[in-house]
Length: 67
Image (tube, rainbow, N blue to C red; front, side, top):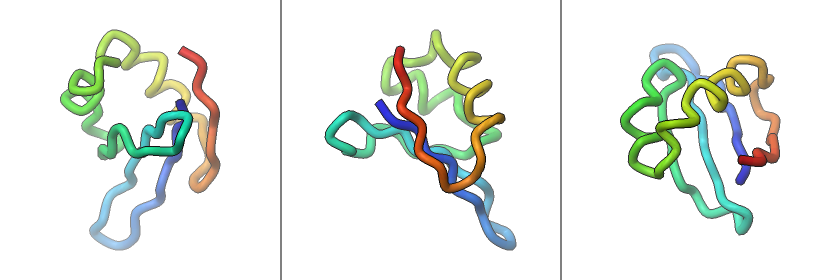
């Protein structure tokens, strides 16, 4: 699984993309509202771990996520 942090502009907030190994989009959510979307893809129990990585990840970089 891969994680990408996308920088928002003006009134558009910052977003996070979660993608599988084939780079198919699994989840797309605002950085400040991840709960519902992570629960929907079955990663609600790993929210703290994922959001810790998101907060440290620079915008535009792709990080391979090993869960």
